[in-house]
Length: 103
Image (cartoon, rainbow, N blue to C red; front, side):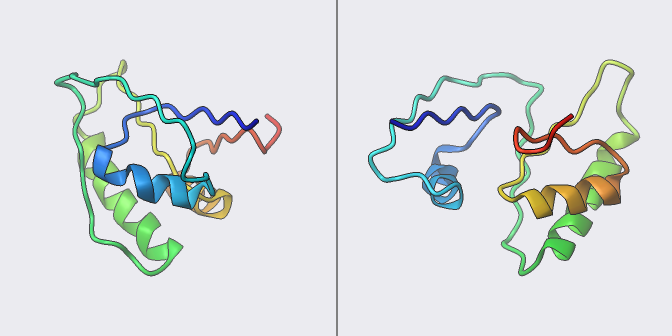
């Protein structure tokens, strides 16, 4: 038995890609709940060829929204690979959290 818990909002059309990226089997049970929340905004980008390009574009998007942040706002960025998360956290000068890295 394998249990995988993901949080956040995943678009239905992204589900198969995410399952593949996390190495989940096709018979994995996926439980979806509605996310009808007006404060959520989806930003879809074209695929990029390497972590540096991905991190650079993520920083552009992050920086463009940072000006509108209030003290109550937070950003949560999901990444499929540890090295990608570490690179992005370094570029954004923020924490990188993973269940595979001790706090």
